Image 1: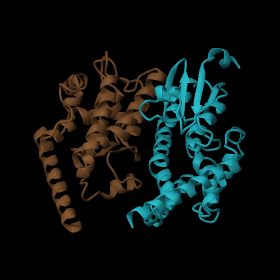
Image 2: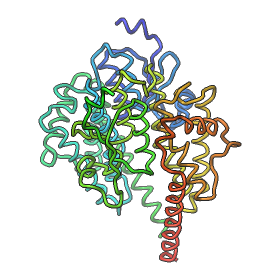
Image 3: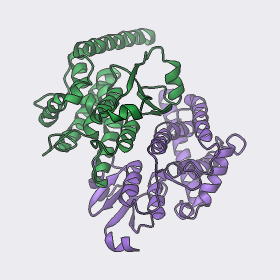
Image 4: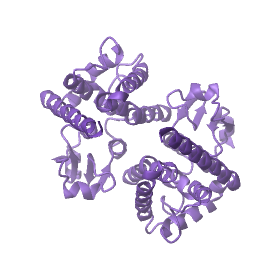
Length: 235
Length: 235
């Protein structure tokens, strides 16, 4: 634990149920880096979070020697570059790195919003969002052809970025009683999901299953209630 | 021009008026890399563009040895990593690289959409969007304190990413007869803008001013006409 002595001041502002926050935890664990974890109350954000990420006011924020870094994809690259003598997170070759970054952006900008909309979007848009979400998952399914992980034979950047699809999506599906991703429709993603979650470093950095499902059940009920109110207002 | 012999097959699918496309051209020129430029007709996308970027179907796409890379920020990183023996585009140190990436994402995800909305958004949202756009520009103004360029003493990744603010925004302001960014309100950004555009490699890679203003005038008129139609439909 040489890094412990070299980095007495590394902390992560995170949230137990945030896949973005967990991305950073997985990366730090993959590199074997010690850090202090500070759980944020997202309903009542700490002055430290607001100071460290005034632009987005969101977790995760990694603070090293007093200098904050926000945005999970930015933090992952930072960790990989800062500790480049340890297990690599991004691929080595520029073209493979570019592909990993392209698909990471795809997950954050296309895939997750479409899944979100399919479960929480306005009712009249849910069917279209479901179709879109399936198309997006299908693009990722194709990326897995001939590979165990997105990163090849072991997990890497894109697997970490896709963590939501491996675990959170299942919790949402269970809470909502609706299925987007099944073994039948996405055999490669389903296999990947199991392999990803089976990795020690991932398993140790997932939120408790029952608590996560309960969390999403509450969110789904709250969304229904607010839609009901909205309808009563406008009708 | 050793690279010319080594890279007979590098081409860029671009669009004359796209700041995203021009980012890549500036980066290729900064590195002194030869490439073939192929102008896309965005109303009638080429089979090559659809094949190279089936996910987003957008320019720019850099194709090297038959392998396509899409998304301007991904391409910039690729160019910098692939030709890391030439003038660096990203900063050297991990923390500065993280900051450059953070602000690049901020420009694409917050700043540009708010500016867009301030000019093209629904009329009842334009005032709020203008306020948001000014706040976002203000965050960038602060980033320039004590620096000539975002990259320090010479242009780098973040300057290239901010090219829209240096040139396109002025053209839109002229076409719309409305000002967001002025010397008085953003003195540092205004000075940066002039310095950025004065760089030889930038100047050579900007769309012709009059043509760009005319292009936006047409877009503004079209947006007004479609809003007028929309209003007539709903009223």
